[in-house]
Length: 161
Image 1 (spheres, rainbow, N blue to C red):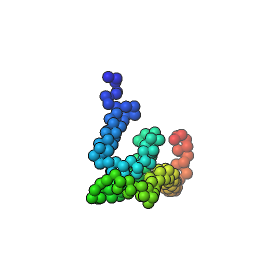
Image 2: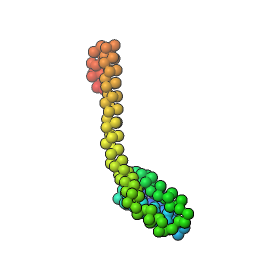
Image 3: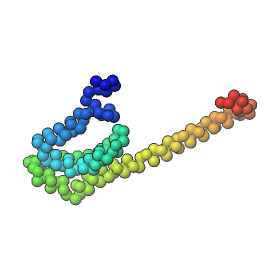
Image 4: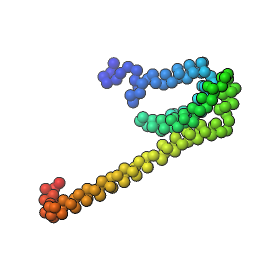
């Protein structure tokens, strides 16, 4: 075995079994609970698209979209589970209502917006914090100059630091 590589891992440190476990879980869910599988597959299509197109480290876009998308799908999964007889017809009827689709896909859209809007907001907050820190340091610098006089600045300039 090559040095630094473990068995069962792919490039990037992801487990080779992660994709296989997702597929195995989907097949098991398909065989055991078809109405739940249909609800999940229809509702989580935006998450699947985000997962396919997100190639960044950590797949932050896919995670953000999936979290909000799943929160939009969860009430409809519970609705399917609360039916006395869980049928494929009942699941498709519940899922393909325009309001249900708009809630599920709208929640995924909010995930996309959150992913797109947060980096500039965080950058602005960090920039404001840095500007505040600079103003505090300048205030302290003025206090030191007041205490020690202008000779402090000349000493710093001569030492080259």
